[in-house]
Image (cartoon, rainbow, N blue to C red):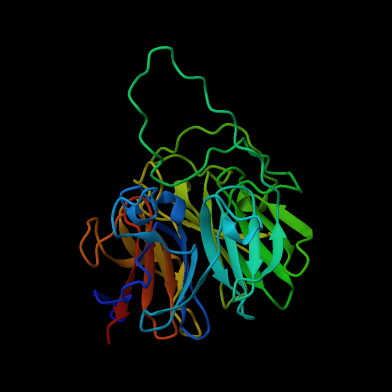
Length: 364
């Protein structure tokens, strides 16, 4: 195709954060109807050296963890920031995914068992789910061994999931909202293997399904192997969900290297596989669409191969990509999420040691 979009990184976006703030793993990014960019990051993923200013006593004159939720204007200035456990209400121990609905409300997923709906100023509107205590740590060996490396995802230790539990989430990763139907679609997630639908005003359960629209279960699965027959289950994590202009639901089945498409009822429509050689964490990490009315292109960040894939939305075929692994502008370290603005520019977030956002300007 001659009209495949091309992108150039803007190394000066965003502007420097105020107040000596620093970002942890940026585990969610979204663009609202004003082209303001919203970030969800994990302050708890910062090391003591990165957050030296808040140690007791302070180690250095920088830095201080930014609040978990930040709103940036199109020029990259912080215009609002809020969130965290200090507000006296339940807050995720590890943030995951952010979505802005058409009313401007902010939805947050988490690596534990809760979903939050907040007003743009952070006022709590809805708290969904209950948080279980993490499983007990294994007993220490009598003879100390090497200290284990910290989790690169910033994830908490989690009890086993139950994909048909109607009262608890299992690490819900992402949300998409149909305001006309008052429904929120949640990918659930790291412990469970399902999409669950709740009332977007009350949080009441409506329905859920697994891969291919079938009833999910938690049977042990073999490791993914390239060339295997498609498995009838989502693998952990089912990582993202988006509603297209066609009314269909597009989901990122990350470790299975596939996109599955459903009607909002849960009826399976089709699937497509990409970068099927990819092992470990898989290739399909998030989904967003080009802003034209037909949503001609789909963009898929791939944290394992450290690039962004460009697909044609109608047939889900890969037609291009950009990026590579690295720490320079335009390169990626575990690119985790992606969002598109009304001009077709792309914003990406990075976890692991990336801990940043980048803007890629659409060319032409």
